[in-house]
Length: 171
Image (cartoon, rainbow, N blue to C red; front, side, top):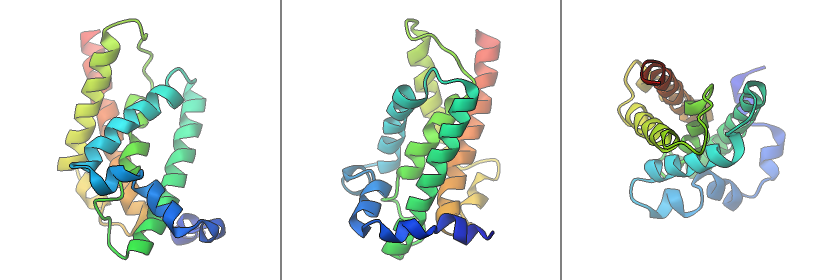
């Protein structure tokens, strides 16, 4: 099956265009706020906290794969509707990728380390997402929702590796 068919399933044609654009931009976040990717990443911290925190590794991966796939479909449709390659207003990719930064960690909420951990992950993710080192920049050249999502997923994976390294040596 071709990637285009995977990112353009039949059901997405039945979702109203305003809904697609509102989901892809997280409502006003992508359209009205300064630095929309940063605000979407911050919202992604809440997404992680309320939906991913405390899940078993298998549940975490299943939810991450499902949410990334759905975000890719929505971003692909939004990009098509806007007729612009990876527009800045589409921020669902940052929001959805953010939880992946924290895969494999079990920081207890009553410790101050949780806030340090979340802030460190947030800052690392923004670094990798904005500057796109390690070849991450090449991924955004892919077309459609795949290119929109993959550079953010790679930034989240790079963040995860660095976080594991930091916490392995400090904790």
